[in-house]
Structure formats: C-alpha cells, structure tokens
Image (cartoon, rainbow, N blue to C red):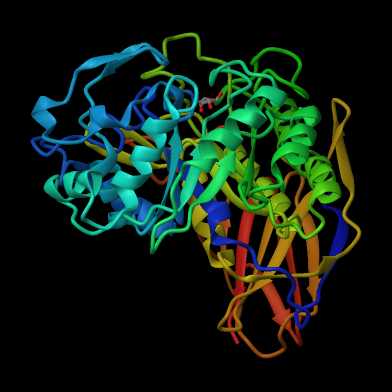
Length: 504
Ligand code: AHR
C-alpha cells in the first residue's frame, strides 16, 4: 500500500538566493589510493592518461561539472611542504607520508594539481600548512602560484613550465587545527589564523579568499571564538572570508556517539534509516553554526565552507584495498541528495563544500581498480544535481512527514527546486523510505513544457558498481509521470533520487 500522497508547491516566479556551484566541490588528499593510482597514474602508465592524469577520471569529473577541488589534505596538508612537489619529478624527494603511513613520491605536486584543475575546469582550493609549516613557507607558496613573473619565486614557476600566474583564489589556512592540524584551542588558532592570513598576498588577478579552520561537527564554541576574533578584527576586518565545517556521517562523533559500526554494503533497512538521519543532521549543524555567525556577521559576509563531508563507515573485516577506501551504494547517493538539499536551504551562508573524497577514499564519486574507473552511485547523484549549479533557489512548500531514528529526524521526501539563468527549472527529489512507494503531486510548474526526468534507484539497497557491473546502479531516463496544466503527478519507487527538468 502506498503511503498518503504528498503535495509540494513550487513558487516558480519567486527566485531566491543563488545556489553556488561551489557547493558541488570535491576533495583530494594524499591518502590511500586517492591521488596515486586514483587520479595520478604517471605518464608512463599503460592506463590511458593525460600528462600522467587518469583520462577516465578527468572525463568523469568534467561530466559532473566539478566546480572546484581541495588539495593536498586534510590532515596531510599540515605535514606537506610544497617545495618537495615542484621541479623535475625525478629529483623530487621520496619520503614517508607520516599522516597516512605510506610512501610519498611527490610525483603529484603543485603543477600536476593545477593541471588536473585546468583539465577538469575546476577552481583550485589549496589548503596550506599551518600545523608544521611557517608563515614564510605559506606566503611563499602564494607568491609562487599567483605573482606575475619578475620575482624569484614567480620566475621559478615559469622555469617549471608555467609563466602565467595560476590565479589560485581559495586558500585554506590549516586543516582541523583542533585535531590532526596541531591540537589547538580555538583561542590559540584564532591568533594563528590572523598571523598567517596577514602575510598571504593578493595579486593582480587573484584576491585570496581565506578560509579558516572551522568547527568539527557540533563544536559551537569554536565557531563562537572564530567569529568573535576573526570576523572583523580592527586593523583588517576582511581577513577571514570563510569558516570551514567538517562533518562525516557515522563518523564516530556526535550524533553517532558509537564508534563506526555501520558497514558500507552490509546493511538492511534499519541501518539505511540511521544513515538517512545522520545525513539530514547536517541541516541542524548548519542552522546552529549559522545562528552564531549571524550574531557576529548579520550581513553574511563570512561564508560557511563545508570543506569535508560524506559517509565514513567501519573498515570491512578484510583489509580495504587502500586506506579508507569504501564501496558506495544507493544509500550514499541519497546522503548526497539530502546534503545538497540542506546546503540549498542555507544558500545565503553556505558558499562551498567538498565531498570527502573524490576517488577511492570514503564518500567517493569514483573508484578505480587497475585500469577500470567506476562511477559510483554517488557520481550519479552529483550528475543529477549539476543543473542546480548557480541557479536560483525557488521556494518549495508542502507537508512532508518527518521520520525519526535514534532521536534524529529526517524528511520522508526531501525536495528542492531552482531556476537557471536560461529559465530552466530543475526539481530534485530524494525519497528516503526504503520500503514503500509514495504518490506525489507537484504544483506551480510551467504550464507548457515537456519535463525530462532521470531516476536513480536499485533493485537491492546495497547494490553497488564494480568493473564487472559498472552501471548496476545508475541514473536512467524516467517517464512514469503525468504532467498536465502545470500539475505533475507520479508514484515514486522506494529509495530513489530523481531530477526533473522543465525547460521553458
Ligand atoms: O578525509 C579523511 C580525513 O578526515 C582528513 O584528512 C581529515 O581532515 C579528516 O579528519
């Protein structure tokens, strides 16, 4: 028996704030198989590559219109010394990556990262080393990247093959400085941020957007201190442009007080619900951090940058193929859909986000296996949502039942609508109920147009993609609806993500 029908009303003529394309960013760290094997295979590899970058990965990231990518960490960022990753590759030092216990060849460094950005069309987001570096080292990296030739550092960049400045704009000043980035107190880090950020230069074509380490999950004290001390300091009120937030669903931190016990693929409806609830908890986190930011910065100048988010499951009984590598199912695609919807709700404050991580680590859009590059169900969620990039949010109202799991609530059906510059309207739906279909009616849509829709679902909740079955879980065209006189009706299958576009 289907559940009670749900009716949603889209106010198609009332465009609201812009949904920044940067909400769909990715994150690549020197961790496990993310950079090496995943993105970087090397120029001599039999795996098809463009100047050493895995060709299939580049194409897949272009297709989801990856708007930005954060690098080199994560925790690794606060141990990374950029000079090790420039110049002739054969002369770069081979060393230990102490953060993740693996060998670092430094074959993938600044120029390789920026080549990846250029090939995929993504804006670079670089996280500088505050934990074990120096102010001088960080400011020199910015000069090396962004200064016009004519200084020693800019000329060195030119000698390394890139005469024109890279124009890097987004700059993280340390990572998780409350944890792996130095175990600092908020009060101490606030001063460190002010000191480091002071010396990071702006150049002709690149005004830096300085991102401070923000809270982990629900550390509201951190947000309070950072906003109090850095949102508008007396002699440089614009020094902090963004404050980061990190949240891993089932990350062994509140609300998942238990350690990581949920598995990536071995789960049923109960664990499905737990993950849905943890995904939607990001809405509460953003609302509460934003309320603190609003008190200090009512004009919303300082943006919230969710530069690490995603699912983080328990390690499987057998060792993973590489550190923190986990499979992706439809459940993870739903997590992304719910997370995007939460970001859109708070579009006035949340400007950028980075899913952790792009390839072979945690909440990945790509998994690689030798020569195979597999697009995960999560890749399909990013693909379905791409039309929302830079569109304007449309108000959407309706009575949607809230479900409950372990004291957290989440919507049975989560939805968002936006209008793009060309007038096209996109509606995305995430149906979180794993067992029952639901009838829906959408009102307020354009009268005269033929909607085109795509549906992402799977026969089993824990189906996943592999080299043998790369498209087992994939979005497919969906026509099982009626659209007449601006009224759209359909029965949604259990557990699905849908994107409908109404082109005028
Ligand atoms: O994404 C994996 C790790 O999680 C990152 O290195 C760190 O910032 C976070 O704790």
